[in-house]
Length: 301
Ligand code: AMP
Image (cartoon, rainbow, N blue to C red):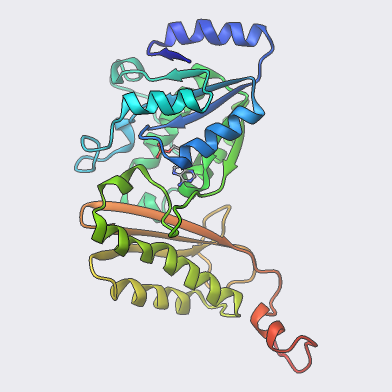
C-alpha cells in the first residue's frame, strides 16, 4: 500500500492508474477506522481496480468549540487496517497541503443543509462539501463511497455532484452497527461503559418509531412525542433532534404516506452521536391492520 501526503506525488500515481484504464474508487474518511469504514473499503475493493482512501480530519467542517482537537487520530493502526483491507493508496495530507492559504471559494448546497445537523452545526456541510469537492478534483475517482450513517452528508454530496457535474458515481452503503444496535462511529470510543449502555437508546428509539409506523401510526407528531419521552427517561442522554423527513429532499413529513427517514442526534455529555433509519411504507393500510385482519374486510385505512 502506498502512503502519500503530497498532491503532486498523488497525481503522478493516479495518472499511471488512468493510463492503464483502471477504475479508481475513493473512500473519503477522517480516520480512526472501524467496521463502518471497512464496509466502504471492502465494497470499493470489489468494484474497482485501484482503491484510494483519503484520511484527513477536515478542520473546515468543525465549528469553533467542536471536537476538532479531540477527534481521534490513530494513524498507525489505520495504516495497518487499510493494508489488511487491501487499500492500494492511502492519501493522508497535512492541513497545509489541502488548505495552504485562506480559501476565498466556498461551496454551499442550499436548502437540504438548513435542517437536522445543518441547524445545530452551522457551516458544517459547507466544510464537508468543500473538502469532498477538493478530493474529487485532486483524485478524480470513478466512484466514491459514502455511508448512510451520515445520511444528510450523503445527500449533500449527491446534490453537489449533480449540480456541479462532477464525473463521479456516488455509492451509498448501509449503516454498520455493533451487536447491540449502536451505529459505529469514531466518536464511540469516547463513551465509557455507562454511556455505551445509555447510548443504546438511540437505535432503540429509532426501532420503536419504525415499529409504530409499521403498525399503522401515520402522524409524525405522535411518533416524535414517543421518542422524546423515551429519551427523556434515559439518564445522561439529551435529545438534540428527532425528525421524520423525506429521504431525498429532507423536507419534514407530518403525515407518513411513503418511505421516510427517521433521523436522530443526541448528546451524551460532550459526545454528540447521530443515527438514522429508513422506513418503507407500502400503502396507507398498515401492516399491523393487515396482520390483524388479513382479509382486509371492514378496515378503514
Ligand atoms: P468519517 O471518518 O466519520 O468521516 O466517515 C467516513 C465515511 O464512513 C463516511 O462516508 C461515513 O458515512 C462512513 N461511516 C461512518 N460510520 C459508519 C457506519 N457506522 N456505517 C456505515 N458507514 C459509516
